[in-house]
Length: 206
Image 1 (cartoon, rainbow, N blue to C red):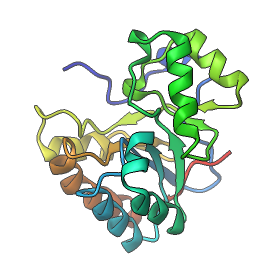
Image 2 (image 1 turned 180 degrees about the vertical axis):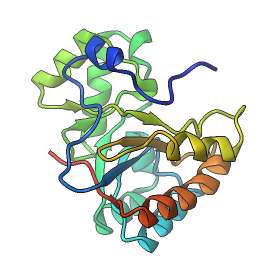
Image 3 (image 1 turned 180 degrees about the horizontal axis):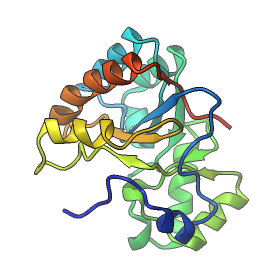
Image 4 (image 1 turned 135 degrees about the vertical axis):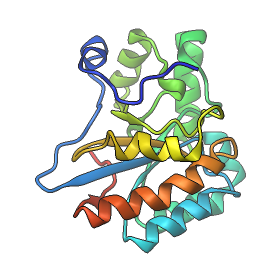
């Protein structure tokens, strides 16, 4: 499985108009979690964040919000931000624009946020423009943990983040069953490492 752990400058140039990192006057890491809420791992994530007073951003699948409204409410109640990750986790490269936009708007009925992250990071320029006209901001990342990759070890997943994240980094984890082994190992260590280095963890907001 090929993917870039750290988003290079040329990728940001190739896809302008998308948010890849954040600016901060203090050392801040922006953790984000895709694909939830999911009852076997999202509570663990929330518990770990609470231990450090950390805030994060959860890009939720609309269908999962419908199935687990109590978890979605807990995310909000604990002061985290939420974003739209479509209703059915659609791959924009394989989906017609009208269907893709409608799916995002369907998710918006349950997720009150202007932030949108394309599933798999895959959406076309025309899909991005259509969503922008509807008021959405496309949020990408500059550090990909790789927790979804079952071929890497939990240790490698942790190293992907610790070795590549710096102040302003938007880091992607996944609160999903598939990622749970690597996430449950990595997240506590990432929180501990950067806290000891004097970093804070904040949510993405616009």
